[in-house]
Amino acid sequence: MSEQHALLDANDITKRFSGITALDRVNLDVAEHEIVGLIGPNGAGKTTFFNCLLGMLRPDDGEVIFAGQDITKLPVYKRSRLGFGRTFQRIELFSGLSVREHLLIAERVRRGDGRLWKDFLNLSGTRPEETAAADSTLELLELTDVAEAPVESLSLGKGRLVELGRALMTEPKLLLLDEPSSGLDQVETRALTEVLRVVNRERGTAILLVEHDVEMVQSVAQRLYVLDFGVLIASGKTDDVLADKAVRAAYIGDIAVSS
Image (cartoon, rainbow, N blue to C red; front, side, top):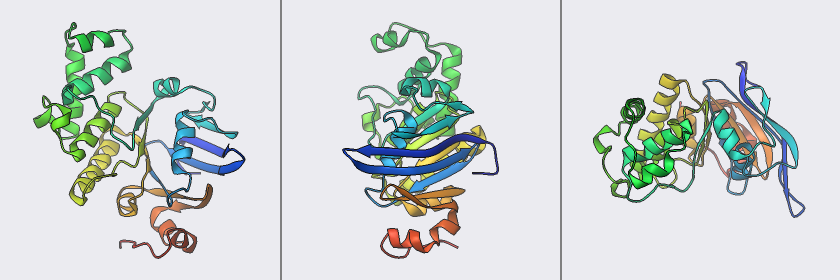
């Protein structure tokens, strides 16, 4: 457990599929305003665990506590209302809509004022407070110069920032990011890493980062958890975990740890 107050506390999460244990009593916590990484080899159970946190899967045993509330049985949309934001491993954006329109629609969803359908039919004007919220997020993510561009014209790196911006428009307490660097080159990955630092620093948003890029995780996460075949094999300060022999063995060789 982090020394700070836990925002997310997942206890003894267990998930089985057809008699096979995909997760075996996994524990993980994220404090308020903290960035935590979750890594592991392919097939380690990262995505299954992620989906148990989000409510896309229900664990067979264990509990998920968020902001002091047991949310283990809550559906996805109710978790979102409590302060969960998320991005997907595969980008899910709407062709034909601009960057700004993606953010404005997310703002309408957050407000829950029933006007979402009018956005698609172009029947409702934008409120000043909606414009201000979108402009703030565009500036934060350095997307102002492409605000009116259709998303299909963007690079993959910019597209991932749009998806991140859409998640931020819901004003999450916790961002759950599923392989956000997937498909990005080194320059785009470094840019995304810096954006996550800024989001964490300027908005105080806690982040749980499920990621295959160990170097990226090391550069941004304060603490780290490692899954292997559904079992938590290490947790603690990031550099300490990456130096652990069991972690190195799970990755079949040494992991380069930056000084």
